[in-house]
Image 1 (cartoon, rainbow over the protein chains, first blue to last red):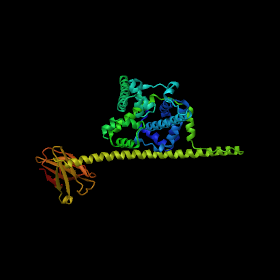
Image 2 (image 1 turned 60 degrees about the vertical axis):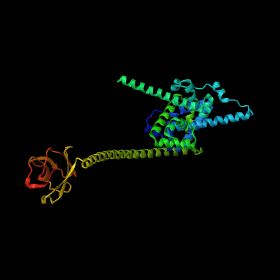
Image 3 (image 1 turned 135 degrees about the vertical axis):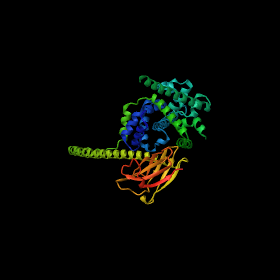
Image 4 (image 1 turned 180 degrees about the vertical axis):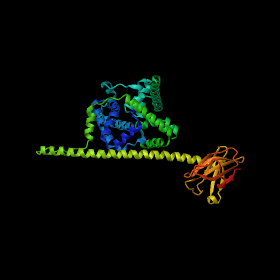
Amino acid sequence: MNSNPSEESLLISQFQSGNTRALSTLYDKYSGALYGVIIRICKDEAQAQDLLQETFITLWDKAKEYDSKKGRFYTWAYRIAKNKTLNAIRNTQDLIQNDDLGVYTNRGAEEINEVDLPKLNGAIKSLEAHHQQALELVYFQGLTHREAHKEMDVPLGTFKSYIAQALKKLREVYQAIIIWIALGIESLL
Amino acid sequence: MNKNEVLTSGLLERYILGETSSSEAAMVESWIAKDAEVKAAFQKMELDFERMAEENAVTPPSHVKAQILKEIAPSKSATQSNWYLGVAAALVLMMGLTSYFQYQKMQKIEDELKIVQQQKELIESELESVVTSYAKTTEMLEFMGAPTTQKYLLNANELAQNATAIGYVNPSAKKVLIDANALPKLDDDKDYQLWADVHGEMINMGLIKKEKALLAYNYIEDSESLNITIEPAGGSAHPTVANLVANVYLR
């Protein structure tokens, strides 16, 4: 994800003109991040693999709809992956609900403990617990702001400010990393 | 919604997360398109989210990629039959021909690419010279239009067919521009030369080059007049006064 912008835009335009090699490169770059999101939302390895595959097929079919002026390729792919995953688990939950004749309980909450989910890594781990949770809910659990603030039992406005603060902290961490790298390089010179 | 609200209401976050309605999304897109600050904030946020996702990447098993590539590959209809060997032979022949044509095609594309690159370099160098000459022209126009620049007409006599040269003199910028375009062309063995009269002495300011439309000279302190003479090619150390074709007194 650190390639320079012109390299990325060349890749995207090749991808949009139907170049399968470009799709393969994009897969190598982004599949891990997308799979990390999908598996955390659906909590089922086999389903996550299917969804990752469907996501890339959709990206391929809808390649021409992507518009770089509206955001990065990854952002577009993330939204598609997330929507696909949410739709899929809604369908599964509907089935379970019908089978059990309405005695549906909060399946999602139970499964968090059942499945060995990948732990969160990187800068998000350095955030305060409530900031971490807020980001996790919207980004890695696929909840909307409206669902997530109820989950955390805080008003929507408070929740929005959690997200804003969490992003600010994240930015500080990433900038500090850049400065450390720069200082490191300087000390080598 | 004003700019500050766009930046602080959580709208950008929700847009990246795909939670916005289509009208909200359209609003975000128009802000990104028209406002550099919103765009920069949005791009940073996108990168931060992306980096967080990258840090939390999980490598999918390799069969997923293989399956995707298989699904998007153009479908091939391979019919097996008794003429197995014949088909195989035909395929080998076709492959040989195809690769030969592919090779030729690639060579042609490579040649074309070279030409395009050369053209690009040529255009770049032309652009550079256009930019430089534009800068020079702008500088000259500014000089001509400056309030401290005086314009003088140097009316030539019959030696130069009564033509008119124009002088732009700016003592504070220590610069003189001469437009000698209208003066008649001289033979190769002759040149026009410009002189400044300082306290009765003619000081050589330089030749008026034949191919240039506008020429710049250093202004000489206390010049009382500008003078143009016709001299042997390459100019003279002292003016041939008999060949004085134009002069003007500076105020």
